[in-house]
Image 1: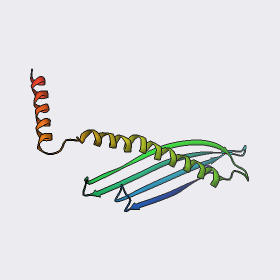
Image 2: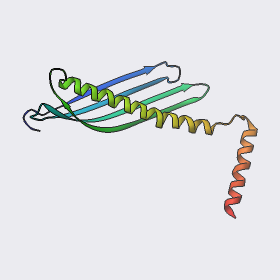
Image 3: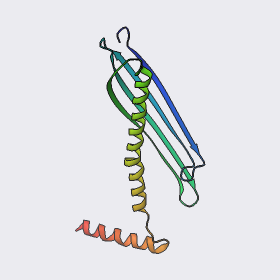
Length: 147
């Protein structure tokens, strides 16, 4: 880093408990920003964000489950630095955009995909007939594969 360059770290934590769908959970994000100032009144911001998401469900109707993971993304942006656009505003804007992008990505990829997989595993049939139907289809698949 040069003379006027600097870096900063911003931490965001959001916890939830007693929600309709999530018993307990947390969103922890760590944002590390490197700022390189240029002589023309502009600055380049390099943002590295890591989000750690954890959701626990403890419901008698569906049982206990946990969905946890982390995601890291990087972004770079050059912005004007003046009275109307100080470093704090530029950095804050980048962090807000990154949080929105990651939240959208996690929802569309992980949450929706998990919901799709779980819904495909479940069957409207319950009880012994479901087990018998599954066993019969599994036996047929094994027989076809053995040939």
